[in-house]
Image (cartoon, rainbow, N blue to C red; front, side):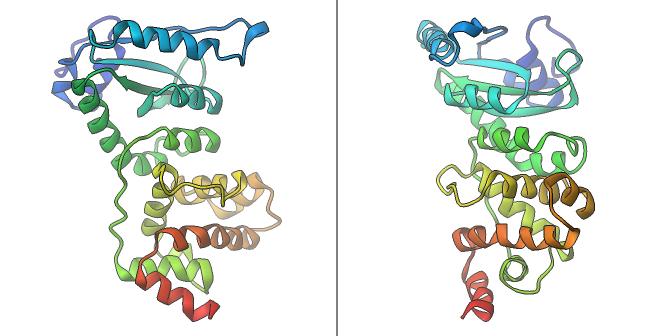
Length: 264
């Protein structure tokens, strides 16, 4: 598979080896959940989660991982995340059947499975911002929000004092996002992926603004129109407001000093 061969029925190791260049991904043993369905009359009662828990109990100790691949929607991403699966990839082309980008997720059953999931989660976190700025630029912002929440990996900000002054000045002063987008992207990625730092200070609309403008780099007038802002200027001001709690949560002394210039 690493050299381009196909093994029918092994979509997950195929993608992890051939597309993501991990030759070791074919060594751990796992199974993919291909279909799961609950009759509409008895949905939202936990039956799907009960089925997945039973499957996990059956194979724990015998396999290294369970996995799944499906056309990503916000609802499905939440369901699989709540059942212990974590995202390691989002396809860059839409699925012919669903019309959606396909999410790949893993649930480790052993140390080898955890190693596989963890390294691909780290690699995914390192490249997803650039993916969203190019091949996934049209991905639904709510899919992106839930996808990033499904990634379990550290995100290092690694921002300079100048970077933080730029971000803090955009939030609290006269700074502009357009002058230096990169540090803004790192902070937004941290916000979505960092489960410990995540809270409810941002509204869904504000998070969609972070996705559309900062991660996907769409033009201000397009973002303003899509999210219901009266003008591009109002949209810009809303982005600054959305960054205030992020600067407060993640900013260093340079960010705090910049903030004090405008609020004290």
